[in-house]
Image 1: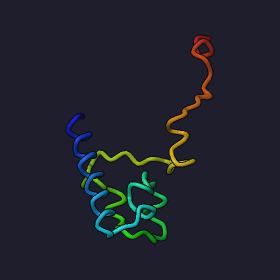
Image 2: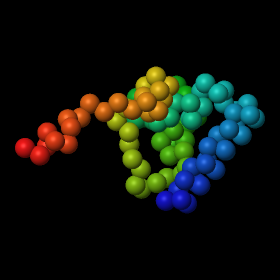
Image 3: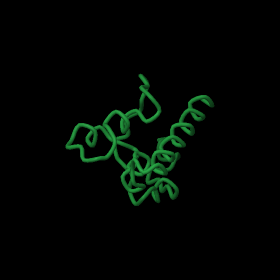
Length: 93
């Protein structure tokens, strides 16, 4: 798992280098639009990078998790998670 994390950090650094080189703008980089849902990938593509770069930013992974939704509120919801699940006691019945 640590190897996958390191590979992801290396891939992110590569994306930053491409933004710094002027290949992509910050607002149109794969990292800015991540995660890419299947709906986005199979729909009309108007990004400066390829679908493959959006789908597999760290290379092709046979065990890729496809998120059902993209970011909401620029990742605010990821940092401020609110669970509306029933309490554990509700499942005891």
